[in-house]
Amino acid sequence: MSASRTLDRRASVAQLLRHRGESLLVSGLGGPTSDAYGVGDHPLTFYLWGAMGGAAMVGLGIALAQPTRRVIVLTGDGEMLMGMGSLATIGVKKPANLAIVVIDNGLYAETGLQEAHTARGVDLAAVARACGVTAEVVETQAQLDAVEPRLYSAPGPLLVNLKVPSVASILELPARDGPYLRSRFRTALLGPDCHL
Image (cartoon, rainbow, N blue to C red; front, side, top):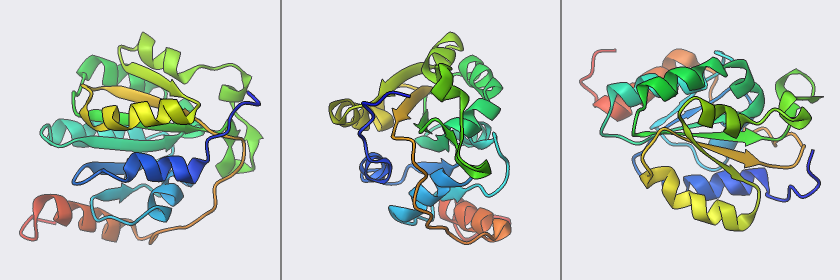
């Protein structure tokens, strides 16, 4: 694990989401959902409470169904490792409106803070590039500042591997009611007359 990781996780997520506007956000299990909620709840955020490893694929489905909307996936390194095959499908489908932010703290935080494979040399950005996904590694404030506007404007698929210190995030959790969260997201996206 690099000793140079100095970016504050929650502050970095807050910066990346501060100008999200009407972009659609899918947040992965645990820490990423807590981070998304902690920096500001939004009806166009689809919080995932199960589906470990599925955030990128849910984001892909939404991006394909809503090609005129920017879709951001906020996930963790453990979840991305579990769903690594999704990068191949995303690379083949090439949704221009999809960006994935992987919060990489090198830990499996949901299962007890064990060291993750990314702390042992697995390079998610290199895997993404091999799958045809544009990928950037962000370890410094300057890199974060540079990638922020590209998150919303660069042609996708784009993966941002956000390297943060190996600490668990502070938990701030939205409702754990899956049908409610799904319906809220769908109504915010499609309007009150959509068929639920």
